[in-house]
Image 1 (tube, rainbow, N blue to C red):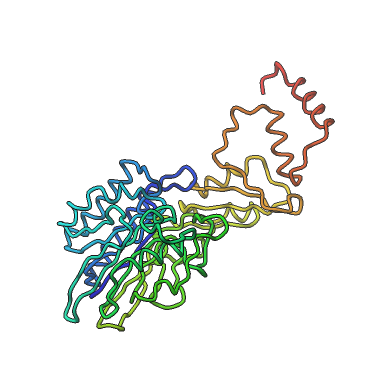
Image 2: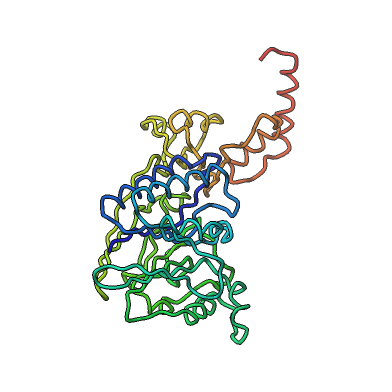
Length: 374
């Protein structure tokens, strides 16, 4: 039996002020195609469906279109909530939609939710666990000390019936110790959310969500599928994909990854202004780093004619000696001439403010221009 493993859809997320809904719709349409082409029985979604617990109507429409496309192809869906989701919102219609082959995590009751599938080798047990914190679990195990995420997850698994003689797949959204992380993920202070891989030894395959880089942890069958799109510039080097799982008899699992294409890529552009201006026009989401020693005040505007979806504009040179981000969406119309001069001077001089004499010169110049048609 074949499954598609995806996670961290973050539907509704933005890059800067740019909506990514069309990019997400494009990625999700590829998931449907990949599932059809590979005769997948089901799609496993390991949490963070939406980017926040109160998704917009537009974000919910995109996800509804995705689920409808899968249901129309008679492809089952197994879905859990992540740390960005509202578990209540994900589970609200769970008792109704399961009749269409969409299985969402229901109200958490201290144990794994389990659905049985069957093929020629026997039963495959699909276990689902929404994102949980110690506080979500303590009330169910008053006789246990539960202060870490590992203790919480261990308690839930121990309280659930996992028949190790059968093939068991777990879908969960947690941070496993050793995972390679990036800037776009959220973690508990002090590493309390770390869970050792050995906690999941009873499962033949663990479909993980929460980490945006596709990767295995400890063994081939304990995997993060990664996000479907690059959600920060720390993900520029990521190769996004979906994970294809082919489950044979007990102990026989084959894993492959299918790369995804982008409607717009997320890239970093770096170099001298003149070279950047000669680059091909692109609507990718970019961070531009200019290395010129003297950067014209209108450099950002000029570059936007080549890269209209520039999310960040930065300057790196011997004067700044560090990467100084300049907010692309900053409104300069409401700033005074003196404030604009101050911002530009600091940008060119390692964040050092100009001496008062410079302002005196500026004021004299502005006074001389008063009344003139300039």
